[in-house]
Amino acid sequence: MYFFLLNLSLLDLSSISTTVPKFMANSLWNTRAISYSGCAAQVFLVVFLFSAEYSLLTVMAYDRFVAICKPLHYGTIMDSRACVRMAAAAWASGFLCAVLHTANTFSIPLCQGNTVDQFFCEIPQILKLSCSDSYLREVGITGVGACLMFGCFIFIVLSYVQIFTVVLRIPAEHGRHKAFSMCLPHLAVVSLFLSTGLFAYLKPPSVSSPALDLVLTVLYSVVPQTMNPLIYSMRNKELQEAVRKLFQLVLVQQQ
Image 1 (cartoon, rainbow, N blue to C red):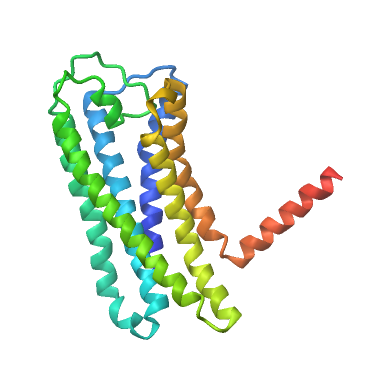
Image 2 (cartoon, rainbow, N blue to C red; image 1 turned 180 degrees about the vertical axis):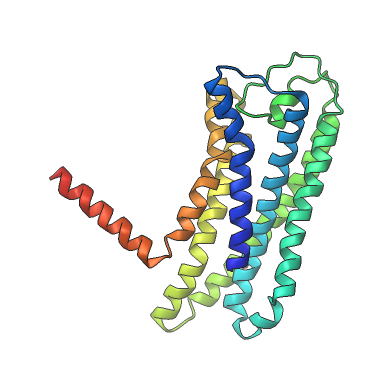
């Protein structure tokens, strides 16, 4: 579990570092400029890191499934070699996805200007600058990726259906609490990651506006990566005690 958390932390840190520093630098210098190569690099890294994180979350769901549903075989199924291979597959899938999207997106001729209405180079915003019908290849690649993402989502859902079926049959309350404490942080991270992304990309066109699109992009590209360490850290008893003392201090000051 901690090996996969290490990989998740690296992905979250890299995701924040890809978009936020450039945005902060542009804000300080009161500019919105970014080079063509810098924009391509940003697209590649964003797609790579987000795809790899989604794949890793799918692998982590399988890890929870084996740990709870097949505990006696956990050491055999999830040995160190298997964990390394699964993590490597998650990173490799993200890399392959990023190569396809970046190469295809920047092979499309742009004839609608060079202004991207986001705080980083986002593929949908770049496609708005493309010539008519030249973006259909990217739509096809996106459709294939969406099918794969839906398959991963179904796998996660089925894994947790079996997990909760087993957990609810545990007679001891302590055992159920331990199992839930192992699964709920991961489930919260998956829910936050998917809900923000889906809401940003599947919102009705009638409610779309530049300001709202910017807020939603920040919501899915920054908030989950920022919240993930806090969600997993809440299992730490020392952190729980510190949060409890902080709330008590705030309540005392308000009184």
